[in-house]
Length: 401
Image (cartoon, rainbow, N blue to C red; front, side, top):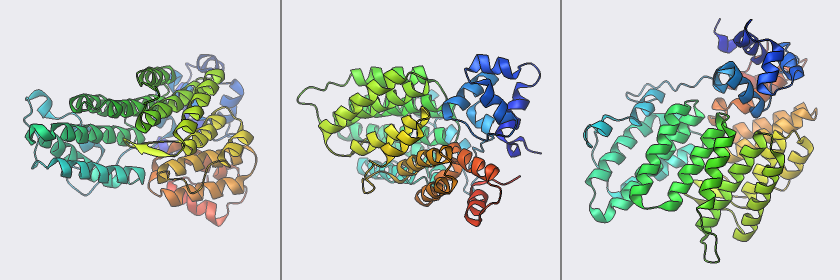
């Protein structure tokens, strides 16, 4: 049987084997032995992201391996999929002084349109489209940078930087953090060629988020705080600078909360809230969004991390339902709402939140471990599965028994 068919507790027990006792795992990870026992005994079927990352680190596996997450994108299209994206981030042109890429160069305007379209697919959670189109697009964007006139060099470099950032963020979602980090580093190099400091800050936001996903909380916070300190917020600061600064402080707050540093998280969250009030509206720059709505969304997330589920739902109620959030951002927020309802014993409301998230991102949700964890616990704890819960579980690969 494929070990991905096992539940979380079974995987933990198998991975620790005979060399690590439950108590030793608890002491090394900082996770209570009660939680570990409940997981292994099947009395609990999910845990917070921070808990999973602490356990995974001691067990020397990735969180994706701990959860049995599938992270491939098979495609009938040649030169597409996860392997092709990884290869597109490590081209032979890097060692051949620019040679080795194939594809006709674009104009600077066409390059910008290409990247904007691909980012639209990302924010809609359409990873199959990205797996098909990104490998070729990256090669073409590199070719374009080498072919444009000097007057368009900065525009082409900016498009390439955003393409690298997109590839990195996509691979992070699909569970390939090593390749995702190459996207960050390559994106920063291209942003430097473009001379765009705020784009570089946005790419460092991606880097900080990637570190967050793999449990490197101190590193994530350090990247976010250090980058924010380089942004000048004087009276002449642009709205773009405010948005970048606010997003960085929110990311730092999230990292601090996940590392158990509640006071720091609150301080950072207050700073982000003050920045959102100064900005006064929700804004999107360099494929990052910031404003009062984003602050409400991340306040909810931090409350869930701190297991303040009533507080999370209170924060969620302040979020404007008509605010211009990308579909996958709103879907991720609904997963926090679902977890809060689940922990407060409201399984029916948790399911409704998950179904709403699925409507916003039907492909996105299949690659997200957090909503799958919630669904797995709902399926495991419901004595009689309702039709909607059974059907939802089937669609995302979570089954009873």
